[in-house]
Length: 613
Image 1 (cartoon, rainbow, N blue to C red):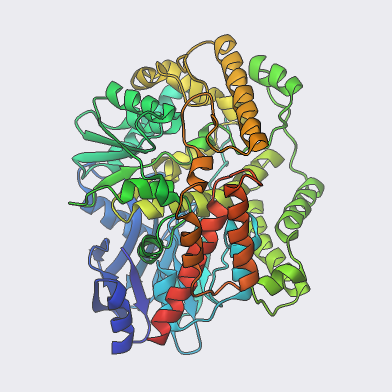
Image 2: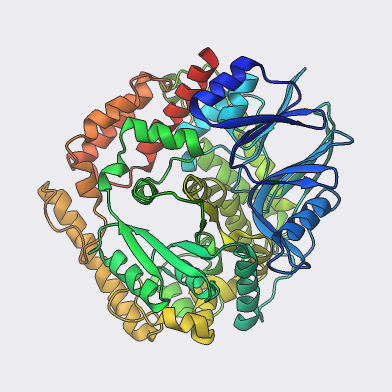
């Protein structure tokens, strides 16, 4: 899946370094040297050579003819951006024009499949692997990028910034044409989201488009795997898969967890094979497992997926569908005030939300709020912890400039409501990197695709008026009117147990409220007593308290940082924070901040080790 395009021929040492960790092949295309993993997908024809992460489809071609779809789409992308409505998919791609030596790189409107580029004085590289590019180019660590990965929201880089100096990542919806010298000849953006807002999109019209996308996505697949949570996103996927496909559903968690039981019932409704995986110790994996997935995917973040990946036996890399970004259909990222008055008026009463006009003044105020949030943890103490030499002012200015890059991308969409501004910012940050990592890590064993993130489906979803999507209004109408989805609506959700999803709100809301209150009470009781064995929730489900009680957890924590590239002050704060959660001096939250630090340290260690060999 990994590839590296280089203006110079990597030396024997470069190949030896890569082959210590990867099975690679070398070749040429036009004036470039190419290094690829053996299973890297791509296209060659019409004088073009392309490398593709994700999938690209052309609706103007017959559905089974994926080869023609790819050929048409790749040829069109070199000439036209954004793509017309006949082209869809969720992808990033690099396309070499062998005759001219020019290269076109692009990604879809969100850009979960990363694509990196680096143009030095006498060298030019493009890759979908930051580690590969860093090793061969010998780019140094970027201190601003390091601070963003340790202290900024999402523990993620912002905009085009990466962990390596002068190495850029494509922005959401970005298209660039490079000359063979590495200079940028032309740059374009896909600003098609939200451009045809409508409050009258019939559910059956949306469903027809969604099924078409899924059918084209799966055109070459006989077996289809689904990451099945039992929520509405995975039910939407389940209902859309053509009935002739053989379905295999996977969920993490013990068989008797409430969420696992619901997922199993959903799988049964669609005659699918079902398996749950439970290895809770992998939430703090051994160092060798952490390093393995850092090397393979560069996407360690939410370790629940390791419970599936470590047990799943690979014969062939088959398709895995994930339902991320279905949350866009439910309006979860629209920032509406949550209080009793709004709940009565807009959730129960179904009044339309009053939306905020996106004026220049309000947009600038919103930007100021975002900048304050992202720069709020800049302090000399934090810079000293990670051994950063830049000043507080320099870090502040650089982070602000990175945010301005995203603000400009948002501004180019000319959005009418401030709520949509907040939503697309979330898509460009949270959805693009942390959520995207879930897709990337599944690529280690599967060909992981996210249909709700595809070009045409995300355009269609974004054009649904916010008042259609808020409070799950539109997804409820889908499950009430679409035959294939009514089946899934007959089962409860994990948030509201005991009653089917299609039950009246008068039954669902009290159950949701009561469960939430009891769960809160049980959590506070565990903390007050200091006894990790007390009941954690009303219904048996994943228990973070137990995860932090693993006998080898502390030893694993210290092992992650045996070779420390993040600074003793930072790693000690991470480790001792984890131990406080274990001892119930702090509430045992998800360990994402801890695993982020461990994975980041592993990336830095790998870059240094491969460079030094």
